[in-house]
Image (cartoon, rainbow, N blue to C red; front, side, top):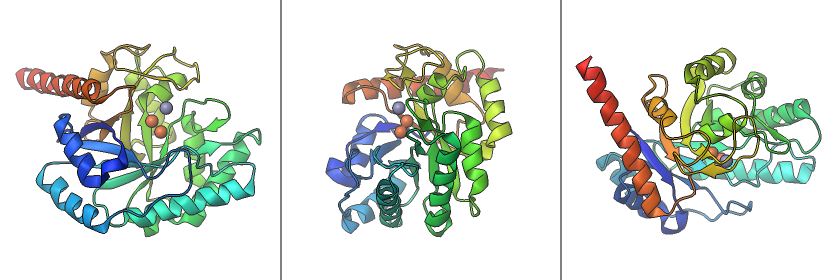
Length: 285
Ligand code: FE
Ligand code: FE
Ligand code: ZN
């Protein structure tokens, strides 16, 4: 099964997003668990979720990605921000208990001048207190571009966080193609090398989701500016290898490209074609 989709607005609820995903040719989607720039989040409709769970199973919707708002920062310098972020994450995981087949993705955080080591320690400390294993939804740290003081642009930083969390079986990683490219990993010329590096540091078994984005900037630029597939510095062809890679092909893929519905539908169709063509090729060989 090919789980592919794009980031959608939560405004019409889970059923609205599921229908929208299907109408775009998708089999999955991502959404923000709350206002991307705030901590306060509304409760979700139990009825909507109940309908969604049945609808998703009947219509072949795969793993969906609940994305934490950008403002959460588990390694903020201010204790108040760290606590707000922690409480909000716990609240998100509580709400997700009713949702089937989801993963929860968050940005590890920005150390805001405290240094990467302190950042790693604060994030791990919060994850220890979060006790992710008590919830059904796996919790994923996103690979970051390394913009500003972001933690998690190096695979070693993600590995260091995971190593410091006692009960880490429920933690994973979401790989963002724009972010890792901006972080200096050459997925264009050496995807296998990058994945081998990831395996050596973090472990490929931790990889649970992929964000598909081209980048407006060259490798190693640490800018985090997403681009439409094929219109940036990654280009279109590397995505063929990414969606067909044996280590990645069964993961949920989600577009976060600067697109409206029509553009997303086009990109999903391109990715589906890349998958189909690869199937034909391997059947022929
Ligand atoms: Fe993200
Ligand atoms: Fe992303
Ligand atoms: Zn980004």
